[in-house]
Image (cartoon, rainbow, N blue to C red):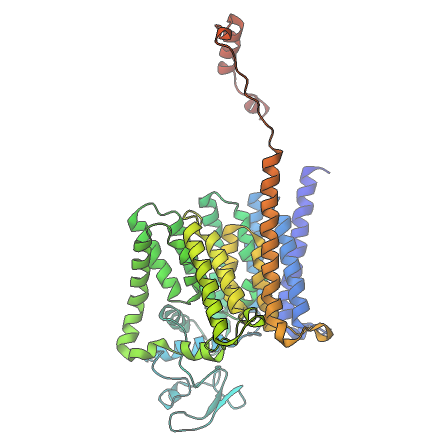
Amino acid sequence: MHPAMSSRLRVSAICVALAVLVMMVLLLVRPSLDPARIRPLPLLIMAWVAFLAAAWLLRSAPVKVAVALILAGGVAVQVAAVSAPPQNSNDLYRYIWDGNVQAAGIDAYAYVPASPALKDLRNNYLWYPGAEYCVGRSATLAAGCTRINRPTVPTIYPPVAEAYFLGVHYLPDASDSSTPIQSTTAGIAVLTTLLLLFGLRRLGSDVRMAAFWSWCPTVALEAGNSAHVDVVAVAIALVALLLLATARTRLRTALGGVVFGLAVATKLTPVLAGPALLRRRWITVVASAAGAFAVVYVPHLIAVGSKVIGFLPGYLQQEGYDNGTRFGIIDLVTGGRAAIVVAVVVLGVVGVLVLRFSDPDRPWRGAVVMTAAALAVATPHYQWYALLLVMLVALDGRPEWLAFAAGGYYAQEPNMGQFTVPTKYHDAVAYGIPILIAAAGWVWRAWRVSRSRHARPVTVPVTVPATAELEPSAAAIAAEEHAISSPPLRSILA
């Protein structure tokens, strides 16, 4: 087949796969478009298959064409995701509420949404009869029904996230619609793609790896549709990783540490990249990151004191992490306090190994392992926690780790009709299979390295006696002069 024709067919196949991916995203966010009423999990599986097929085909596409496809496909899936209200999470309603509260000059950590002190801030979009979450009147709460989940507890989001919510508040209709914050988060996801393209090119890596982020179904659904603030944290963490991986001065290292601290002060999950970032000037990284983290908390600490902790302790308790009942894989072996000990030991060992062996020029490789280990141990039901891992995979280039992002959807919605596994094994399946896939990928790569080493030709050194060192002949000198003075063959053919 002619190379040009082969290239066109490959690009056409990529476009078909991306069209299928966009259609699956549309069906997931707009179930009314699906006359067959297919369950979400089969649609998700089809979306992941289309995504992986497109990414595999992209490997041999010309770089300029690949960049155009990465951007166009990334924008297309985000547009599809933004086209409907959030389907799998209602966290963004808390984001909108926190923005409204701050715009009124009230600290976001001061009151719970149902507090009588905030009753005058209620609008018909977030508060109306028949909404999902209703609160009865009491001495500390004002009655009403709202879209905001957990309206009787304080916010859980760190200060940089709260600043983001306040910024979005000033967009048109941001208090009366989910579209502004969905569009903003989708835009940040596309911006992250641009940062990946720039960063990969700067690092001398294959820019086509950016497709692992741009086209990933997790990014489309959790950015454009659910508008999770994790996307903002991931974008900031990406900047920190690129700065610290290329830092050769203490000042640049400090700047990277500051940005990393801001990422953690957006959502705590980027802290998982910490052990991989401490291989070079760790004191500078820790001091600058801790300083930035502390600075953004100071205004809230002054305003509300210990309330800045928010709902974090209550969240850990509700999810079962405080009593050891939430570790899906570990619970198959042991439970209760023993499960907590095992979880801490496993994460501690992985953290030490990453800290000891991580490459400071490629910290994302160790960060992938640390983040995947945390997901495997904690087995969360919230698939957006894997967004950090997706970005790290785009930097690292090993797609088998994306299985943890896909597994999060099974943990959240394991219903497969008659094929549904017993409840006890849901989390073990959701995160156990990704462990096996990642292990298989490691074995396969090790086998390829071993095979390439054995396939190298053995060169036998030839010893030339000293007596054989003769003066070059006149013919050899003339040939060498001709080669130097003549243009190379490549330039002639060009």
